[in-house]
Amino acid sequence: MLSVEIIISYLNYDGKEYGCIWSRDITARKQLEIALKKAHQLLECRFEERTAQLKEVNEQLCREIAERQRAEVELKKQVALSHRCVVELQQVSEPPLTETESPSASQSLFPNCPQLSEVFNFIENNYQQPIGLGDVAKAVGYSPAYLTDLVRRLTGQTVYRWIAERRMTAACSLLQETDQTIDQIAKSVGYRYAVCFFRQFRQSFGMTPQVWRNAQRESEAID
Image 1 (cartoon, one colour):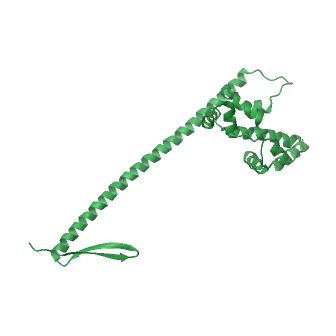
Image 2 (cartoon, helix red, strand yellow):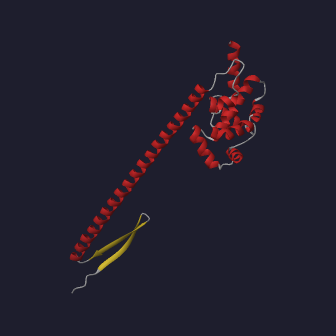
Image 3 (cartoon, one colour):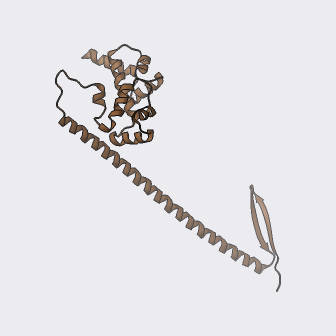
């Protein structure tokens, strides 16, 4: 049997190393070419299979994400509908207020939800302090994560949002009924820093506290 010399060499091109296999024997070169083509075809086939698998996995993940988003939207709708039904039921079952009676800001703001009465009572009694989710959770004996889920499930809003809404209600009353400065009002409703109060007020009403105050007073003057 004749031995055939196979030469393997390496070339550096553009920062990459390439291997070369060749032979001076024509028959050997043809056999090498056939073998390399088969190897290349096999690699292409495996690459296509792996790409198809990854595409299938990606499509499955997209479907699962879309399904989860639809489920979350549906759950929010059900929570909102349930809350609306409770409110309407309360309006039907509760006797109308007499002329001398008027609901307080907290009574008209917070929903009548027995499971969350402690939560809303704590917010009402402490919103003028710099409280947060952790303070409310500790006061009612729940973990922050559980309380967040419970409040969102029953009301469609977060604990933080309820605190913010109570503070904004109080702030509007002070802006309209007193001559306190914006900084004084910010501290009166539980904000350590006026900039945080400004940001929350603008987020809630689309304008600064001073612009809101001026608009209210101009409206009253016209009336």
